[in-house]
Length: 271
Image (cartoon, rainbow, N blue to C red; front, top):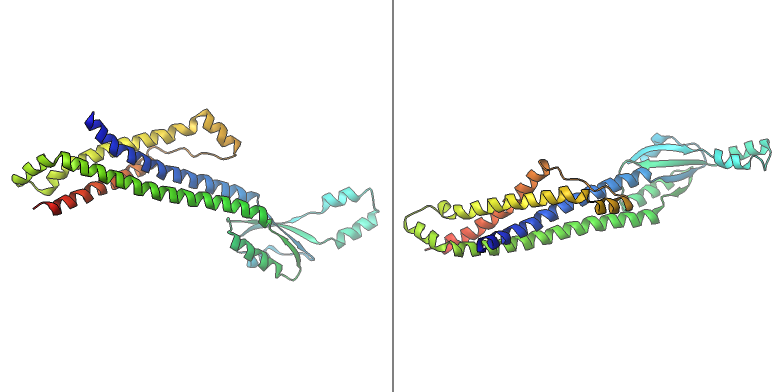
């Protein structure tokens, strides 16, 4: 029971650490997909007194993906029964040109403001609508979500590392007698600490398996699927081999670093 408790004291912080890493990665994927969806739906509308060429607009907007003219046909069709054909033709000639701009990347608020200013400098452009207020809210939400995920992961890494270091010290005390005997017989340092390295390797494998199993199964739960569909997001599924290998590497790195830090300290204290 005591041995199981000791293993749990290392496995638990490793699971929490790996969970936070994978959660942050999943959130990044969700946010990136949402940004792509927003930028595909997002448009900048400009009004010009004369026809514009896409090449001219691209000089002012380097992130321009495409530009298309918005036809006034819908408005003119509504007026067909109210005014004569001649007046309708004159109105069509008098109407300004409307253009719909699509961007290739997700701009920040500063970039969006610069795009608007650059477009307004074009002599024939009389109006630029970036829908900045709505866009700003969405951009801030996405930025806050990513920032919170990074802060959360950093805190988890620190806490998990401290918990593992504490457990490593406990393991050293439990194996102190064996290590002292090995020292008397002239055993090298790596041999005295080998048992601790074996323990953390086993715990790292268990922690990785638990986290991979969680992230493989959670997105398939009906409740999670329903919530994701309701908020219109797609929860990414974990790739057991590729991402599991990455998580195992992270787990081994922090576990081995914890053991090494404690054992180096023990080596310095050993006369």
